[in-house]
Image 1 (tube, rainbow, N blue to C red):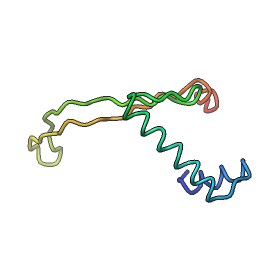
Image 2: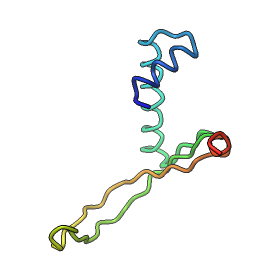
Image 3: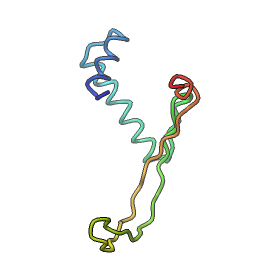
Image 4: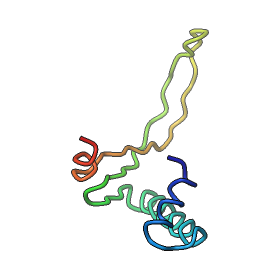
Length: 90
C-alpha cells in the first residue's frame, strides 16, 4: 500500500476529503518523527511501538570487492508489532 492508497482509504473510511486525509496522515507521520527525536520511543497501543536506537560507527566489508569500509554512526528505527496488529494478521 502506498501513501496515496492510504490517503484514499482514510478519506473513504472517515468521509474526509483527500486533502484533509493527506493533512491528517502527514500530521501523524510528523508526530511520530517528533516523538522519536524527543523521546526515542512512540507507542501506538495495540498497533506498534517505534523505537529510535543509536548505532555506533563500525567497520564493514563491501561484499562485491571485499574492501573494508567505514560505516558511520547513525540512528536506526525499530518497529515492534502490537497485539491487535499481530492478531489481525494471524
